Length: 286
Ligand code: AMP
Ligand code: MN
Ligand code: MN
Ligand code: MN
Image 1: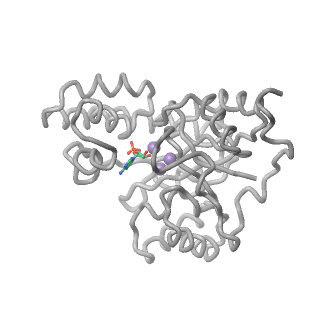
Image 2: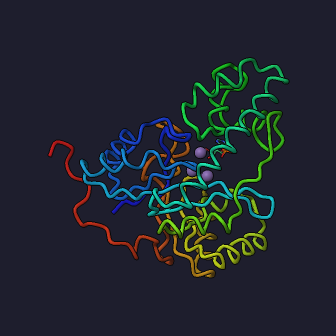
Image 3: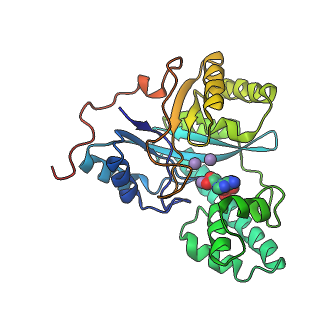
């Protein structure tokens, strides 16, 4: 069974519609897929309908932008009910923050000679969940950088000319929203925060105290040694292990749906506690 619990659609910074995302997952042999847009759940309905047609089990999810000790941490909410009031209200506030941050980013970029940064990016984004990825695509289109790595380094990363630091929602609060909506909270791509082991342990200890239950042990941006290290930490803090590609767009060299996300034997997969219908990934023509 192929399980991929982290993927984006065009309702945040992915390029595919939820329907096309599910179709691609089906073509890659994925049986269980979570749609986890940044601070947005609008794509879930469309994804669910497509998944039902293709015999994929769709997990309704979200990736929440959080702050823990002044650092940005991404938390996945898996199996959330999008109509959960606290969650829906909280995510709407985060999207407003995204829009006001986008204005600041655009102002900074324009000061540094990037023309039309606001209109150009908003048009390209076409969603309330405006992310730095949208700015990155705009900057590349306009010839201000060659590729993603470079555009984040020069423009949008912590030391970039267009960087705006953010206070998102407190990690504790985000976990509460997820629980309130009936979901499970999972720390996304833990190795990407570049924390010392001591600090990462502190994060996981706090997270477990708040009611978080999972750690994304396998993801496209983790190297094999990082995956082993995260598996050890998941076990030490009694967290379930999750696996997700963090897919954003086709033909990216980094991520493909269902690929390079096998979990080590030592961990307990988060889906081991879920009821998943046995019949999945039907033939397309059925
Ligand atoms: P935001 O949540 O708006 O700050 O944007 C974060 C998103 O930017 C992440 O979800 C990634 O999709 C993307 N991102 C961040 N850093 C990089 C990078 N170095 N290269 C490519 N994409 C990145
Ligand atoms: Mn993203
Ligand atoms: Mn993320
Ligand atoms: Mn993601």
